[in-house]
Every structure is written in C-alpha cells, then in structure tokens.
Image (cartoon, rainbow, N blue to C red; front, side, top):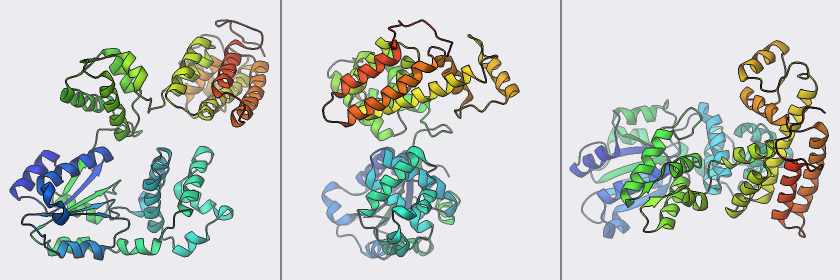
Length: 454
C-alpha cells in the first residue's frame, strides 16, 4: 500500500499502523520526514531518554535490539532511528552502489561515499585482509568493483580509495550488522513502546525484507519524480519551488524561473540551499528577477559548460568572457574551466579532421541533422562522440576553425595549464588570453567569418 507522510503522521498520532517504518528517497526529504516524525512522537524535552539514533553502518544489531528492549524513561513512545540502514542491498545492485559512491564523492560528500563503499565491500564479501592488502599496484579489482571505466571516473575512484585508506575501515565489525535479525523481530513483534525508523540511501525492492515491510504498509518513499537519467523532472522541481515561494510570499518572474530551473542539479539539498540563499538576498522584495538569480544562484547543473563551449565554438569573445567573469565570481576553479575548454578544443580538432578527411566530399554547410544521419549510415563513419546529435553540432562549430588554428591552440592550452599551476600568473588573465586566442585567433579575425579549409 502506497503511503504519504501525512498519512504516516496521522497513524502515529492515533497509534495505528506499523511500529517499523522504512523511509528512502531524496536525502533532504528523508531528513525532513524524519524530523516531522520525531516531532510527532517525542517532545523536545524528552529526547535525551525517549529517542536514540544509530548509524546503521557502524552499530551492531545487538546494540540496536538492546535499545529496543529497554523501556523509555518517560511515558509515551520511544523512537529509534537507524540511519543508513544496510539491510536492503542485494548483489545485483553492486553496479548501482558503485556509481552512487562515486557520485557522492564528486559532490564532496566524502564520509557518505566512504560509508557506502563499506556496504559495497561487504556485499561483495571482501575480507579485512583483502582490503588491507590493496595498494596502488593492485587497484584494478577495486576499479572494477566501482565500475570506474577510466578517465575522470578512475581518478575519482582512486581519490576515494586514498581517502578510505587514510581512515581505517573495520569490515569485520560491519559484517556483524549484515547478519541482522530484523526479519525475526518483525515476526516476534516489537515492544509496545517502540517505533523503529529505518532510513537508507537506496534499496533493492527485490529483497525479502523490503517486500515484507511493503506488505505491512511500512515503506515510505519521499522524493521528487525523476526521469530515466536521474534528473529531477521539470514539473516536480516547479512544484518544489512553488511550495517554498508560497511559504515566503515571494514570486518569480518568468525569466528568473527558467534560469533557476536551468541551474538545478540532481542534488535537491544543494538546490534548496541555493534557493534559501536567493530568498535571503532579495530580502523584503516580493518579486525575484533574473538578475537576482544570475548574481546569487550557483549553477549546480553545470549548464555553464554548454553556455561556455557554445560561445567558444561560435567564436563569440564577448559572450565567452562574460561567462568567464560569472564563473570566477561564483568560485569555479580555474583549472576546471581550462579543462572544460581543453575538452571542447579536442572535440573541435577531431571534428575538423573529419571535415578535412572522410567528410570532405559529402559535408555541406547548412546540412540538416536528418541529412547528416543518412551520410553517417551510408559512409559508416566512426564518430568521436557517443551522441550523434552532439557530433553534428560539434561539426557545425568546427567549420569556424582551420586545422592549423586548432593545433596551435592545443599548444597554447598546454602553456596555459603550466602557467595556472605556477605561482607567478594571475588565473583570470591567463584564461582571458586563452579565450581570446580561440575566439579571435592569431590573425585578428572578427567573429562571423567562417573557415572551411585546412
């Protein structure tokens, strides 16, 4: 039976429903739901005795069960919250857990990534000895475990490994939590004073324990609707924003709303933090404009990457420099910006080589995407990217450059990288020079003149 938080709170108030509740979904909404349940069950002045919280990855089941068997000091309910409960993973889920651990690492959530890695190691039956023996020369099994295929993923995986090696992991202790007796406790029944709250990053709905809790009506999913790629849908995000605006009596101008949505990432908590910062910035004003969002709201979706590469590919120096000013103002690291420019330059160079080679006789300026698809199928071309439409757009941008320009620019990028890593250069000036070089070129051409020859 599908439940919502309002129903759960009503059942807790009247004493109906299951004494065990599993909550999972977006971490922000999980945390807010748990706080609402705590407020419902345990008055603030009784929480030192009638409320206990455990880290499910560190606590043994014996500790949790002992607390469940101990009556509360004050009359009323006793709430036990087992956070990061590790009881709902299956081996088939290892790829998903590995990618989630890397995602948490990239978001700067180091402790959370390390804890999820421990779950994955235990799930794959890694022993303490095997973990302790892991070093730089035997890292491949670890990379395979996380599904790190190379490039940035491998770099993230190796950084996570180095972090975990500097923080002792006790897999033997975590093994005890794996042999939990939660299912048996459900059969026996909890003491009448208890409410057991379980929260977790993710679940495998195929596990017997999850299905059992679902049958009992003890599962609550809280989260915004997401598409197949994991991105929060536009409709769900609009409703989330509208709810926060109703609470504060603010309104968003249409351009500001679109800019806000374009800067939303996959992390709802981070999005909320930026939204709260925006609301504080506008103060007593009732209307939020695009200029407010531009100044305050950090682009968590990294949509700036597309804006920047589009400006550079179009050789639009003013737009590219404006993007640079915004990025440096919001604290983007200069080496990250340079890395983005270098990746775009490599794509442009590959595309320009195709235009000068295999596509020289068939490519036409103004060619439609459908025509391009037909040519690719007929010529059986090996395109550099994974997205055919992305390759098509990259070829369009590559028309603006010559091979010699792009090769020269690659050399300039190496020089800029060296300058940024030295102590004597000003990052903003180094980046401005590299932007101008790509957009204007060494011959002082102005924007709009196209190059099609080598």
